[in-house]
Length: 414
Image (cartoon, rainbow, N blue to C red; front, side):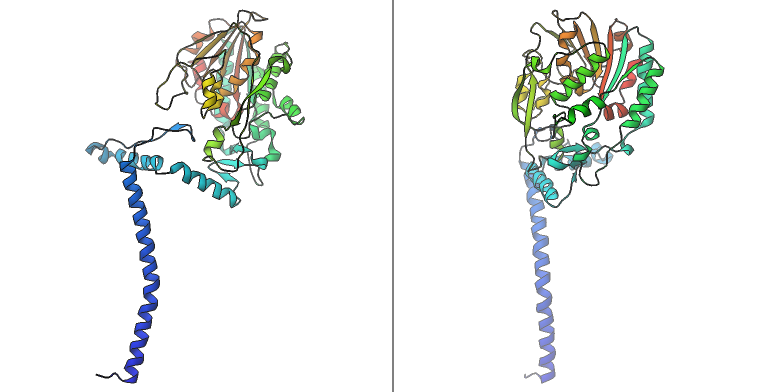
């Protein structure tokens, strides 16, 4: 049956409308299918691929699939564990993280995962005034002064400025970090009121920085061996001692491929160059090292702790791994004692510290017959009992922002 002209025109319009509509719809369906297929494929890979225990890139252990139980499902722990495992075990996770971080950098983002990417691609932890607790800072200093009142030892506090405090010119545009000066002023006031020495290092570090000396790593939050030498010199001067010239310590480059912990936070961002790790090698030879066990934070990829084989004070096996800063003593211990029977002095030094002190202690070894380092994160014995053993000097040595927020300093008086 023949259609009228009007019917043919109407049929043509409807047919054209359907064709126009089918193109976008088809693309939408294809896109949805690809996404669903990709997610399903990754989900299958998550189930069949072996789970990884450790991420060298991030220097941490990864979440694994939890045991599925009725009780766990009802409590939500299973769902939470599955989400965390999916995040950590995602196929090609490291590669995707690097691509994402590098993409953000190329799009002119200069803050990635709480890390500033500054000039010369120097990396800084983003720590602002809002991240710090003045209340906790006062509390921690109060714990130090209370400890000092219970001992006859010479007690000092030395808080190391954060890298950004001395390198503000390298921060990215609009990069904001906390101002250390009010905390230094407050610390000096509160300590000296209680006859505790507050050792200022910022001015001397700044003086060396003006000579273009590299005092902090570009990819790590620690100071370099140059910065540690300056810190040791300042502390010894406060004790009316002089440090030997740095050349006498035979400082040597041991690695040229050092990447620090901040680099891990930006997922191994491409375009960041590795840097040198330099160590003082001419150290006392007859050292006796004692500890309360293996390093508390230096787990192997198998999750096991073991005593390192030290060459002097160095665990050289760490130079082949990701966390090369752990070359100092093999990591952080609850309690570590270094005895030097050939020391120029016969005094004893007790240090309450974070990992900043690890690279400074080598420059103090020739001055003290015994140096004991306590990391309060891992030390669970009685600190007052330890302090009462009798020490010539006690030093509280932390990076400043670490000390301000640390919740373990209260152990000093417990």
